[in-house]
Image (cartoon, rainbow, N blue to C red; front, side, top):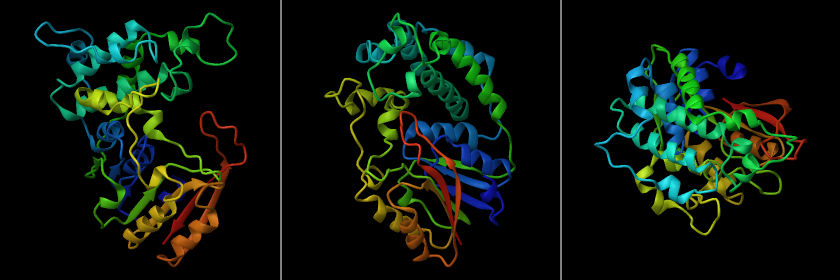
Length: 322
């Protein structure tokens, strides 16, 4: 964030916002930020931590989330669909209850904060913090362990949830600027931002990408509980959502995707975060950016590894085009 904060801008678009860390940092220095991500669960994180200026989760709301209410009808979708896949039967029942209770929280920011805590609790209980494999056995096997945080895995869901609620409540602040969180295709977003920050999914030099839609499909399903069943790819054991093809999921199309994005936002400062060994390459990025901008700088940072990656040669790069 250091290099970005030195640039002259008031309004910013975080076009592929992900965890909202960049948007939150820009909000923290008083910028008017639009957070965007194509995953709906990430938009909820943007609602909770970027657009939200003052709402926190109240104790009375928490008291309503953990128990089944006699006047409500509850589905058992997670319990039926994901038995033995990610969580224990007891944990699946807890998730079913809380996910459906969250939908009844009337304030959208308080509701988004509750979803944030649910997402983080689910991630904490997962080996590798992902949902890419049906591997509950890694948590439950009675073996000597040389990896993994068994203490975290065994910690009750409710304890995780309450801890993340407290964390999120502490993170809420009023920046004095009007920020917002949206869920759109980046190419359909409006113009007029002083700065556009671009951190897309990454393809390595072999064309292998980081598929966030697959890695975090379970969280996306929780966000759309009633329609979840119709979106699942039943052919696969880990029950992911059906794929959503885009330029950012196809190494043969991503270069054109970047070209279109750079052209669309040609009147904004462009800041691109990527990896040194990726597709497009560093030189190709520079060429693409120079087709729309006069000045292009490349900043190099240290080694970067994704979860499960064995690549030790990849370094983070930041391209700034003005």
